[in-house]
Length: 531
Image (cartoon, rainbow, N blue to C red; front, side, top):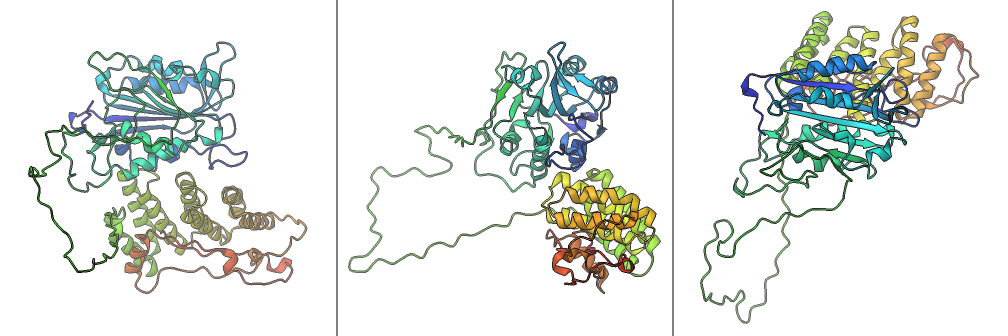
């Protein structure tokens, strides 16, 4: 089914982020910590990429509370005349009374059959796809292994069900990364089958994959740049990954749900060629080809040097290209002391990018760091802390805790937090910084943040052993040099991010703490602008 955005019908994306049987999901999976919010992961990509129409309405339910509210949103989405993409995430449980599957919400449970009841009246030509990123209780897993899967009964579903609750989000993150990269050489729109091999490859072997949607619907927009025509004509089939959905026949009935396991095997597709037709444009060979001697008699053979491999650079899209001039003007205004103008222009620029790319897309996160940078220069340390904290949380969900830019954003948030002059404001933000540091692998920084928060609260814990993080802080390093415009644009457009290790920059001071120097008592990491 080909979907075109020029038919005047807007698309709709509905994201239902259910519960996981634990507290609110805000940080990446850790020991004893649930999975990240799926709405935050999906906000890293534009709705027009998730649903390849010219206009898309997005409805996000980041913390679905009760079943009645979710049912109302499902009913409204089912009445939408245009294409619909429904993303459902959360934890599946087995109802002890009825034995049916249900999606766990924060304060309620939504029977899974409600999805089929609300969507069954949608016309097939409207276009509907349900994506599920789910975990399941041990009691529900045997029921899910039945073929056909009860999850896909009556639903155009593409879902991944994992027995580990902390794996919720892996499927969605893999889909977002696949859509960011696109598929070079393919058309302007992609089908789920064209992405399934790449997405399924990152899932654990025990993950159950359920596919019950009709094949061939071009749902997603291909964001990859076209690399030119291929050698093989368009009439030949493309080499695609194995699809768990059998091809539709002329007498196709309702699609049958299929449960598959991820397989590491490589599938080779051979293009058929008849014996009497030479491949491509190769001229016919003579009946009696002459013998050709490659070396002359009496001369030693010439040794051929090994060929030097040539790497062709793939064109990289510069997401910041439309904003580079404005970024330079904003940073130049901040350096000139026009802080109010710089902050206001940074806010306007970020809002424009949100409308074009999505709330937590890559360009928006970089522009948000520009805004945090000029906000800090204006002396608004509390606001800068909040901005850097939000960037760090978004990067935690989309890139993970080990990404250098994630760690740098967290370091910037901590440095701005330590610079807040109002102790009451610093105390209120302290728990957020503690939770942020808990999500990162550096336990030394977590201890330093906890000690600084204890001092702000007036606690008097026993003095800890001296560490480099507790030495007097270095001055905040300003990355903006004399040529502010060119330097800001160059750094912000770069893909390389340098994360500063506070242990390397701290002074080796072994003196004990004293009440007089508590303000200088903890290391302050260098604040960098967006990378």
